Image (cartoon, rainbow, N blue to C red; front, side, top):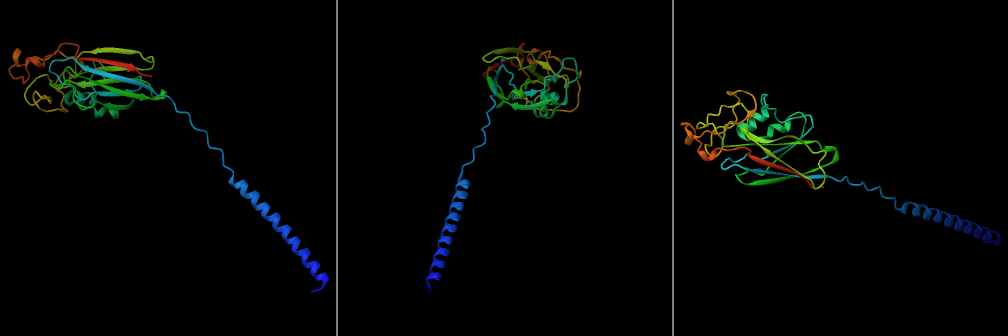
Length: 246
């Protein structure tokens, strides 16, 4: 190889080395850029809940209560109205203890059920955790199961102004749904005193909600009654307390 060719070859080789180095440097820079860790998205701040405890106490001597129905609903809704006809969900609850129908009522946001039958002298607490935009009103309902269609509860209590650590307490009388005659006859009462029929779509009473007149019982002269004097009740039949926990 001539000296000129050798020199040309060396110049080309040097040029190629420099070009290669620039190329590697560019690749290295691009790699560093791709290895940069992106900033994580902002962590959303959790919205604090408003927590409540609802406690129901059965004050009767021998009237078990059906599983407590705690209904969260809009402020303009009422679970019942004295002097007006009972809704179908109220009729069903008052005759059978089944509260499921309230979940489908207009204005109802949620239905929470108690753990089971609330025995005489016992109490049960149900806790609610609500977002601020969920806070409205609540109602509480239960059936006196050793009756034809007696119920008790709390009708449309607003939670909006209840302060943290504050408690409000209410007493409830027994109401009559007015949908089934208070015959106390065998086969008409779903509770343990009879084990009879629950809901019946036929309305054979005054068809308006009113204060319950009470149980007569066989001991007090109603010969066909399956109830005894122990099933009688004075008012109030329930105590309901609502505590704002936070």
